[in-house]
Length: 121
Image (cartoon, rainbow, N blue to C red; front, top):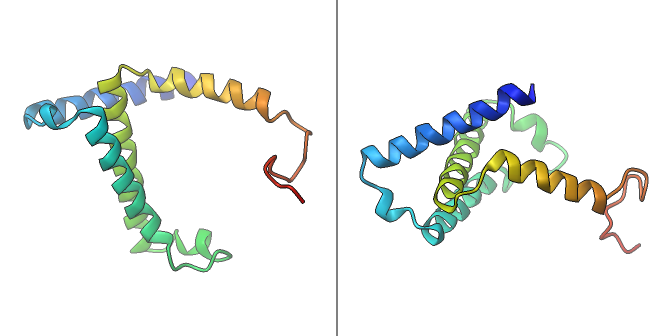
């Protein structure tokens, strides 16, 4: 599955870059502006969950029309992230794999089952 996923992510990145270029938006796509736009989209995603009871959020997030709003906002976050990677020359798949290796070393299996390392009590 990994082999199929990586080319698809790259294809989406190429499509996003083309979308931006066709509209002459490249001048607006500096890293700072993209991070601010990405932050705004994460905020819009957070709004979808803002007033949902925590114990019901997973179930309610699958019910329309909320489910469509969540899909749209997740896609917006992903598209800005893809564009940021393009502008900064980041291979998203490679960076993700490298970070997962770091996380596996930092949080080894069995260290504190069922607890975050930041839990103090």
